[in-house]
Image (cartoon, rainbow, N blue to C red; front, side):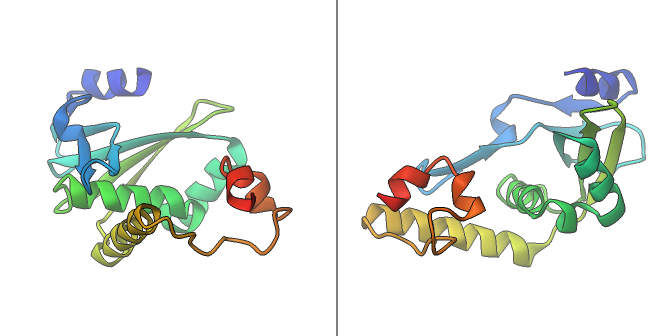
Amino acid sequence: ETTAAAFLAAGFRLERGTDACEFSALDGRFKGHCDGIFRDGPPTLKYPCLWEHKCIGSKGWAKLEKNGLKAAYPTYYKQVMLYQAYMDLADNPALLTAMNADTCALLHILVPFDAETAQAISDRAVRIVEATEAHELLPRVADSADDWRCNRCSHRERCWA
């Protein structure tokens, strides 16, 4: 909320929590919502512009600053691509704001739309929904329930049962 308030105080017009900040596809089985949409403001951005805000630790923040969103946080990158596509905000780069959870420093990164990535992730969502409806088990990410990725997954027990 403080970051959004700072943008508003700086003269940006930021839309938040409205239907325009959400998308739903596949009869509601695939949906999401962004942190906001910049509608107008200083000429530092092109409008409208998707806004995503993430809070990350110092190590990840440094990685993001050095390598950019796509390399440092591919999941967040794909999320931004999907939101730009489904919310019809692909014409202008999105703004990702990262807050360092340890220092409260802010990092702002412009993220241009990547149609190929957006389409690939959208296609993946369709495959997952279709497989779920057909009661099909998709290939697991690992060969063992002891894999570190499975240990962090909230679906681990169900997946390996």
